[in-house]
Image (tube, rainbow, N blue to C red; front, side, top):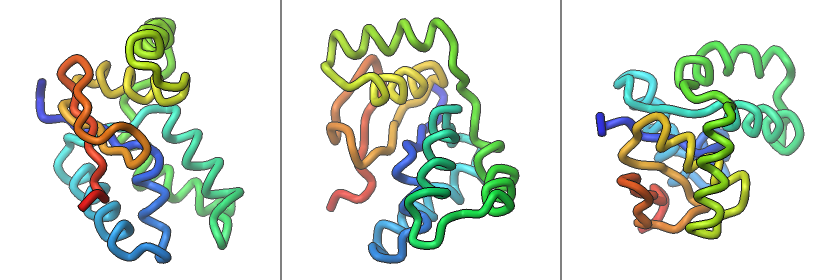
Length: 141
């Protein structure tokens, strides 16, 4: 392992959610560290999910210009795992072994392919270890 960590989509989404100031602050901290430290990773799935949420579910939806700006300044710099047949096969193995949904399994598989030590996500099992990867809910007190 190389100290890399993976940011699930919900981390990026919370960085824009002022309804939960503590979560927003933690999300912003994680993203800033990811960009400046070079250890943060996302996958193409996270890019797709974030743009979908930002354009459809934000209180003030992102425009295409907003999407392009965020893509250029944040998403593109962190995106290092892309869909592949190996990723899908690994996700199926994770589904079978640990019972996660297909999309959650793809996130876990992407984190493993990026050789991450930690996967930050609010929606998975806090402190679970999968093949050397530890899932952490950064918002949990």
